[in-house]
Each structure stands twice: as structure tokens, then as C-alpha cells.
Length: 111
Length: 118
Image (cartoon, rainbow over all chains, first blue to last red):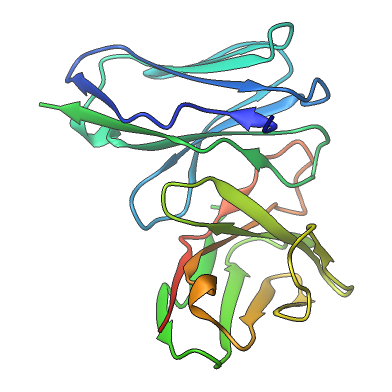
């Protein structure tokens, strides 16, 4: 079993839809959780960063962490065509260490 | 702030040659940089951890003699792919953390280098 599982999609939604992206993980020691957005042929761009469990909201984006279920989510409200990208979840067990990434979910938002 | 620059953004080389990729933190210092590799439709896989002034730490299965890492300053790490082969063709991405911020601060990524070995 891989440490981080993420459905690669693709996920296609109409503009304005609410998007839910998810990852599961097996290492209970993970406590730093991030979501990155990656456009084609570009490096990952940090979207959300959460420590331990709970919710965090930033504009149209909400990140949720459920450590008891080893499950994290990213919600995108009022999705826009410009949100079309690959979304990668990433996590680590210690501050300052390298991140373990999910495979990424490809999202396409149509206008 | 927190810009990580990679150069070149893409490179095509012949099999058997060596290629050097640079990773620079433009507006911050980084004692540690991480090198990742990403194959098409795959996740970012950590190759090695680059520490300023010391030897890099390589992940299992990554040949240290093939992927030479030099972290000579707090703003520059280089990855040299030696005797490249077509199977080394991939997207190489570096990341760094601002040393002036606490360890909880997230990593910042470069825009990657697409290597094609013919």
C-alpha cells in the first residue's frame, strides 16, 4: 500500500460547481498537510497548508484534515476554468522534512 | 517572496552526456533543498535531500553516482545527471524552505526542468 493515495481522475465539472478532492494516507505520524496546484509543465504552487486536524479556509478553498480517518480533503467553491489543473496533496511527519505526495487529481472546469 | 528558480526549464541531450540543473532561492536562504522527479501522470518522487555544505542524502533506489548533487551555498543547489540515458527523461523539480522561517513553513517549488534524453 502506498503511503498516500489520491484518485488521479480526471474530474470534469461545469463552471460554478463545488469540487471535492481527497487523499487518504496510511502513516499515522503525518501531521503536516498541504495542497498544491500544478499547471502543465510547471512546478507545484502551494494552495493550502494545515497542521494536524481541522479545517482551514482561504477564499474559495477549504482544506479539511481528519486524522482519525487518515483522510484529507480540499473543497473548491464556485469553480472557475482557471482552476483547471492538477491538484496534489502532500504531507510529512516532521517539520522541515521532505513531503510525500499523492499522485495528483486532474481537474477540468468547463465554462 | 519565496521564489525558487530553476534553470534550464527544459533541456534535450544525447544519451551518454551529462546535464546540470540549477536550483536557486532568489529572495531567501535555504540550508536544505529537496530534489524531486516526476514522470508523466505520476506523483513527485523524492530523489534526494541537499544540505548546504555537506553531502546529500539519497532516497532508496536513487544512484548517488549518477545524480550528483552539490549544495555549495545557501541559495544554490545543483543536480547533475551523469551519463544520461533515455530512461532518465523526466521532469526534475527542486524545492526549498526559507531558513529564516520556522520548520513549519511550507516548501516552495521551482518551475521544474524537463529533461529529454535522445
